[in-house]
Image (cartoon, rainbow, N blue to C red; front, side, top):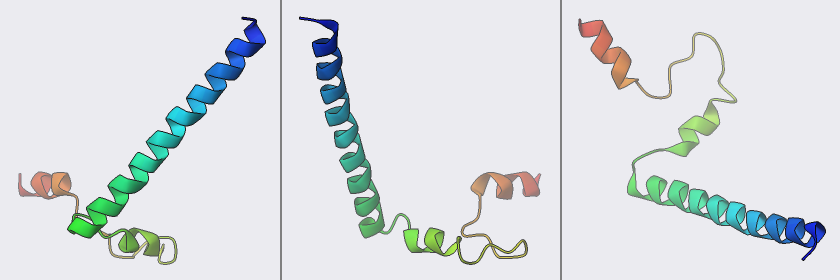
Length: 69
């Protein structure tokens, strides 16, 4: 087996691996939106409504804890 064949096989398996990761991520996004854990349309509106005084998409629980102290 030459180095070129080894590189070709590595590239093929790496592409398959990344494709599986991509479809897994898409499935994760779809399921979390269907369960109601996240509303990704709110995040899509951030690109349109990006003024400095715009309301945040969601509250940060860490910053809420820091304000109480």
